[in-house]
Image (tube, rainbow, N blue to C red; front, side, top):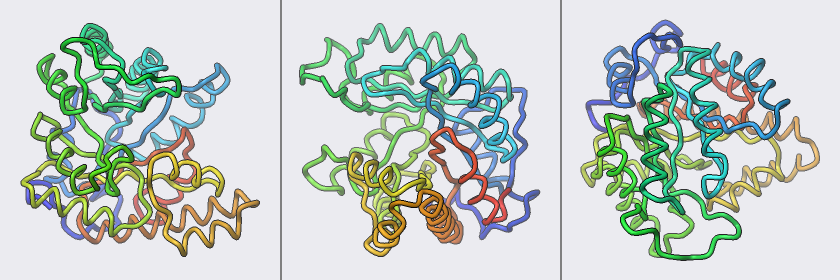
Length: 320
């Protein structure tokens, strides 16, 4: 790990590693990771997605967001659907989170199927909304997507999008990384890791990984990037398991692997969602504890708009 972002073996004291959730000045990705590393703080962040119904939105802002705020995250990201299907809602939710909580936010932005004009319009709207950070991704193809060349001048890959975002202004930029390789990279995961480096070379400030359940995959990914000269924070993305059918569906979609012993235990509670969720908390806690000992800069939790599992994991780690 880069010395600029290496943390000492962490204490479990809340005062030494947690960060106040409310700030008054905009903070971009490079600022927050450097500051937290300098102050021996772990950078905790969460991902939300735009609610599908008005009732879901009320639950998000009346229950989930307040519960997540109690965990003192450094920032919250807001994603959207394949092909940019909830792009406007993404920005609305991100801006509202920042306005109501004072926590820094990041809006996801995908380039697939988008023109330069649409992307620049989104960035302008983000800046006007007080959103200072962007998670730049190529994006998933919609189910009805027909392969076609991008519009003239439009970014085709995430590295192209990073360059566009950096040209447009002083946004902090995060990109995705795939410890087990992207499902569409047929050349192997090592080739995909080189493409992650290309995103950093294009100007990305932090790499946040796809979910994974075997830490050896993360360590191999991190080690390869460091050997290629990548010195930005490489942050593990953590998705607590909530049910057996759900996680089997998720891992199939994204190409992640469930270790055989974990899968066997999940199959044993396939009809018992609470038991599967408890198993998910235990496994994620063990993963995070091991990565803490290796000095990771932080964790990015895929919350699925729920707070209970994340709170339980951070509680067991002594971080909440």
